Length: 145
Image (cartoon, rainbow, N blue to C red):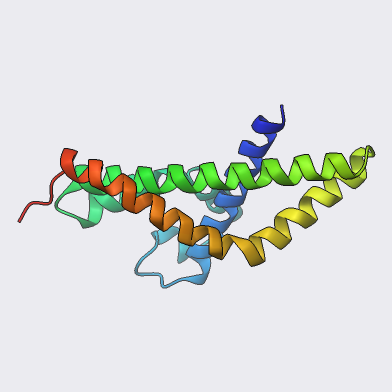
């Protein structure tokens, strides 16, 4: 049950970060929904954040399959790491107290602290993992001239 809750929270966090990234970035890079943002569009983009690599690869690169493969691998590695971090936070909070309200507050606090301070270091680990994954992906999807 903790793993399912961790995956759901990680999915929600990445959806919120995608919406915030779109709203805070250059409008030429992101979708047209940014020009006239509404709550419904923001919810849709937040719920469909995992489709972004497919959309970006189909629009911007002549090598669509390679872009989609690398985008999916990047998103999977990020969601796996974030799910693990949230699961550790939930487990840590449940060991500290048996009160569900304090567990929720403790989990939210731990996720916020780890998200602000440790996730940039975790991104370095993700880069190393992606370098290892890039080798077989390069074999299956070679770079064409």
